[in-house]
Length: 263
Image 1 (cartoon, rainbow, N blue to C red):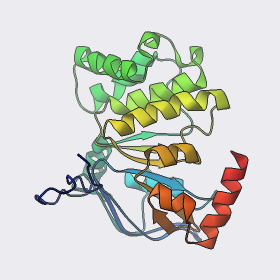
Image 2: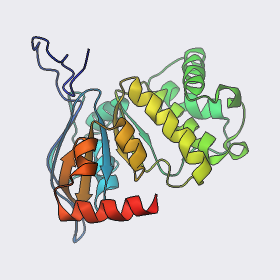
Image 3: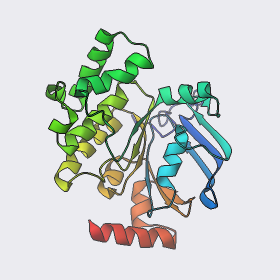
Image 4: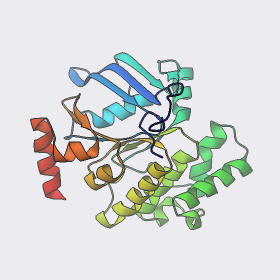
């Protein structure tokens, strides 16, 4: 049985359409005089995996930071899991409850143990009791294969382990979608694989994901769609096979030539 990106079973009689997990319509984002995002339109289906790539400064990180209002847009509309994002704190909180985010830097609290890092937000935001938050945290630490590190402090872990803690911490909020902002770019090469393996495993479990990454092997393996951005615009998007074998745009071809030459 194959599942199409819309969540429909291929060949089945179409049921009621599944609403998209994330919709961005006509997004414009400026930093003073710098036009960071220009008329960006993106729809991500439930369970879809998107890889965003492009040169530095193309707007990739800005795009995903707008989804959970880490950056505010000047115009356009963002809807996440049915919640329309606005400047009201209530709307921002509703969207952030549905979206987990993993950054380039791990952003763990150095004075708290791995377990404490993971239970903080569920207790504060989801109002879980400590025992319940701990049980959830241990489940996700096992899920990312570092259950035995729960009582250590971040400084006692490798970079790859710290990033897996950051993934577990995001999962502890039981998000419907995960955003990854170059999650392996701060890691030593030998640690990249353990983080990518964790992300592959999440993807296989059906998590909706948008990943900003230059790891093209990961894109080929996991993505339903690869999107190339330049100058704040989506220049090209396609399934991985077509994207890598037959890029349509000259900018895409130049970028892929450069990236693949370095890998």
